[in-house]
Image 1 (cartoon, rainbow, N blue to C red):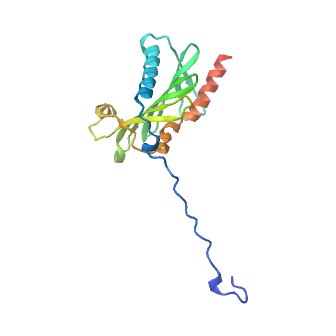
Image 2 (cartoon, helix red, strand yellow; image 1 turned 180 degrees about the vertical axis):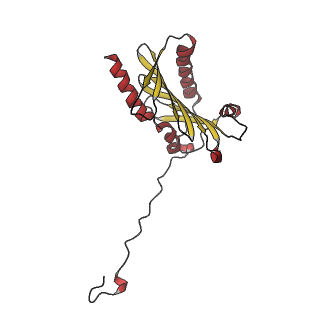
Image 3 (cartoon, rainbow, N blue to C red; image 1 turned 90 degrees about the horizontal axis):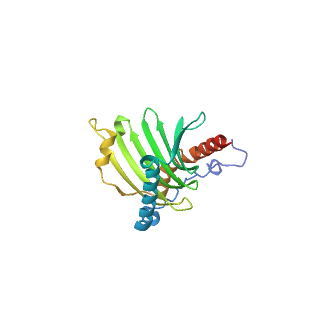
Length: 195
């Protein structure tokens, strides 16, 4: 609406808000390919698996949830402490399997497997994430395969494993997919069963 003495030119639209794309950390900055560190984490995972599947000194419990992203999770314990959390997520478009390895309740390794069932994006991915003592992601690697109609997700296993090619923030989307929430509900279940 114009007031006396005001011209049309004085009416201006508010300046457009330009959303800045967040700056992402490229792999050459965050990806620490320290073979001693990687081998150390791999050996810890191997030792945990030996307790879980080899000598069977780890006890495994399945927890069921009402208000969580998934309906259940398997937790393996050694000397009363959780060493592995494994959970699956299914929906009509995809299946996700996450395996989290813990030491003193801190994550040091995560394996993420994903099967995309949508016909236009039929694919499989497996990623491995390596963390330091403060749960900071240090290294990751992955393999990926576009699946044809005749392929099954296990065909991914023939693909080479490469250093993670994308940003730290991209890698963390896989890490954060359910895990922070799952950690909370799992630790709550563990605390409830201890009392």
